[in-house]
Amino acid sequence: MLDALDEVAEADVMMTSLAARRLHKIDVLRREALADAARHGRELTEVIERGVRLELAARLRITEHVAGRLIRYASALTHDYPAVMASFRLARMTQQHAELLVDGFDQLEPDLRDRLLPEAIDLAEAHPVGSFRRELKKMIDAARAVTLAQRHEEALSARRFVVEPDADGMSWLHAYVPSVEARAIETRITAEAKALLNDESETRTLHQARADVLCDLLIDGETSYRTPESRGIKATVVVTVPALALLATGDAERDAAGLAPAVVEGVGPIPLARAKELCGSADGWMRVLTHPETGAVLSVGREQYRPPAALARIAKWRADRCMAPGCGIPASRCEIDHTIAWEDGGHTSLDNLAPLCKGHHTVKHHGGWRVRQVPDSGGALEWTSPAGRQYVVQPERPVPVFRPSHAGDAPF
Image 1 (cartoon, rainbow, N blue to C red):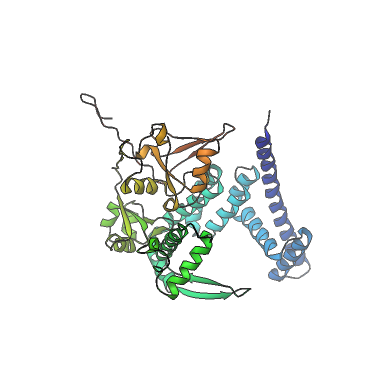
Image 2: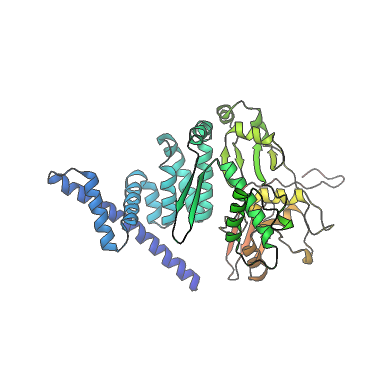
């Protein structure tokens, strides 16, 4: 017997299949209009397609911009990515999955597109939208890492700052800057804003406080006059570099050796030269050097509740984000949770720690969910809902599990 959630899921499958059918019919509409125009000697394709967009928008009571997006995805899925459309029509992926895949693959070179498409479809069918977006970006970035340095240099020349006036005496600030610096800016602004909000008299939201901190930093150069807690805050960005990659002379040599690219938390791959620069820079960068064959598991048992800074860092580095199903909040903004609560005998060890955002931390403890670490998984969490459904969340970087051997026993 189906319960309410099963019925919702069943309806969602039908809606997904209908969405795929709708896109197919939209492409049929476009092709028929072009064929009819050709028969009558009208070959202004752009004008004909604009007419189709106008009529589609009028008939569906949507904007022409939305109609244009539907036409684009309909054409791409029908002609460029038929395997994606087949999966979409069977409701093995949602429309959001299909659109993300098209957006990501349209930027790829044809040979990379053909090689990566089967893996991308598998990811879309296996992951929720948020996780798929991250996994797809990671896959594309890794495949294009060998040309990253050149593309980054070309993009760097386009850096700029723009002010966009808005209504009610407000404006938007836009800065096109390197991703590493952008991540550092976001981290510092968020840290200072949270320090300000520690004051019980504060009524601002985090968004409001972040905007105020940004203005204070850019106009006055500092925010130390606001509260003592905000003094001395600096950005900390996690840079993960495979140690053997540091021996390569460049991205091409690293790629030829089959080594993973350097990655900045929340940003993605960066050129090897930039990674080497960051690994040798001053404070403010947490440098994690990984080796393809070694790892470590840290624990302080029940000697203390709060994990040491190094243990908290590796727990967050392993997960990369909140370890709740589908959540994408960076681990650097999460709280460290004892999977088995301290008061229930849980240890302060890597196999009992995971980062959770404040909202999902509250859900875990007060929402009727059960959470456990999956044994020997390197950090995966299994969430069981109040209705008994299970969801497994994998960490970004599983850490090998080591167990001390007892006297006379063979090593594990």
